[in-house]
Image 1 (spheres, helix red, strand yellow):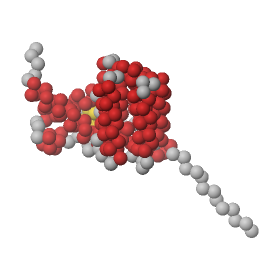
Image 2 (cartoon, rainbow, N blue to C red; image 1 turned 180 degrees about the horizontal axis):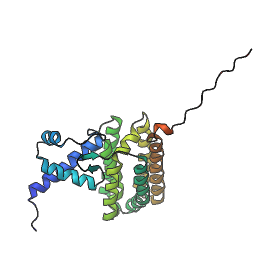
Image 3 (cartoon, rainbow, N blue to C red; image 1 turned 90 degrees about the horizontal axis):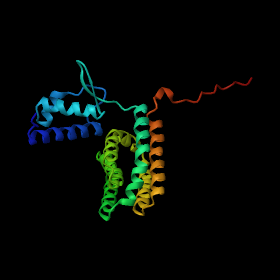
Image 4 (tube, rainbow, N blue to C red; image 1 turned 180 degrees about the vertical axis):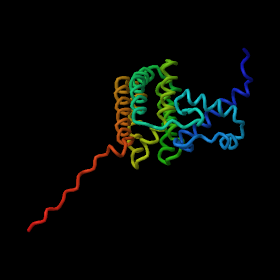
Length: 233
């Protein structure tokens, strides 16, 4: 079986990236079917490669297809956040701890540059913040040379992207994230593997605690009962 021409593969890959960015930035709503005709016209492509891109994004866990209804963005949920961060906690701390010992000078420069770019866009609340957060965390893992682990962490970060944005929404949250990132990077650059493992674990647990509160259904939020005033006669 012959493989598709290079230009077709490139178009398919590019469409996946573009539609993924639309989903992660919130440009495509999760409560309405994706309007394939309008989206294809906007991207100036036919519906066939667009459907292929949506099918690939369904495999990545970002899109859901319903018979006779089309594709929908997978909604965020507390259960999904718990699963994503449980897996990240199992993989990232150890992977980054291993990588900090094996990193080259070039790897260290890439990690520093990745954090600089994240800080700039996060402070300005730009839509690229999720991708740059992902780039920073992956820069801490990639030098470990564990390709399967790195690829798995990268996929988890794509799924976590919307949750990272949700976590950073409240005013001032970026400042805390910035401090944690810089503390992690300092330990990583100093090859303090045990400290890197500890700091990344705490960083992910902190994010998950915030998400548990942010994603809690409003019906679960307890409201203090109003005390009735007792009239004195």
